[in-house]
Length: 286
Image (cartoon, rainbow, N blue to C red; front, side, top):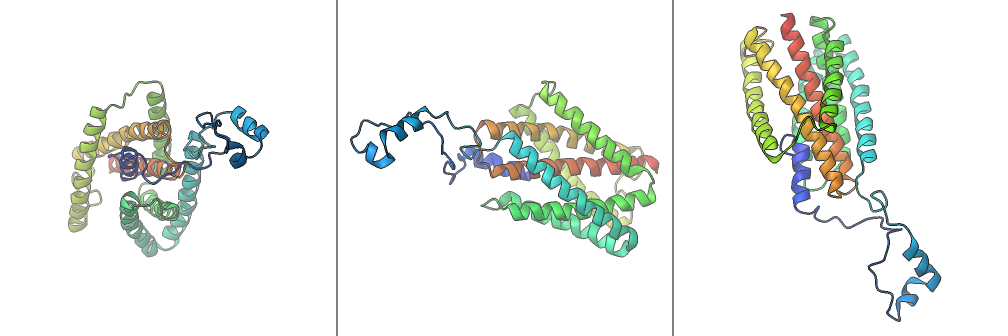
């Protein structure tokens, strides 16, 4: 999915028919499409009774055939989220006790997740260790940046966390009940908006560093708050695209290993939403 580098990778693989994937774990599949009329069938597969048992076996489900399921995605998402929270706590403590080291975690985590995210998205083979490593780096970054914001704007972190949970729940329900329709046109529009905002974010970061302005363009004024509101809205809408990509991956029979990529992409969007809420509420406190 173009709105998310990880999902963009899965989208391309889906279009190529998940090249290189051979149906794994097909034990138990109904072999009704196999001809048993040939004389050598019994010798190849065993006794006639074994053949009959195989024929009568129920059709294999997604788990049996090595295809991704919703349970796979949920479990992988919870696992990665646990890593983010755990290492987020580490990043918070380090930043609290040693501000200098905390700042290094903040900058290093931001650059590290950017580089690692691109590697995950464009690497030819899916690497679970890279995805796990990304969650670790992301956790350290989130913990460090959260501690810095909380130190300056007391109470902003729990507010941002609550807003993230509420927005995630609201977007999921809106998508599930059809209040938000994800169409090809919708994806293209959101994709262009995200690419545009990504370019702006880079420019804004450079501007903030050069001018020593905490939030960059707009600061804590009306323009800055407007920019943050736009970013929160964009991240929220991206969740709908992520939900749609997960459903499409399951419907098209993506290999089970792609549950890691789907979980990774969803976590990336949730963290982005949380960071944008942090910036919004901090700007409103200026």
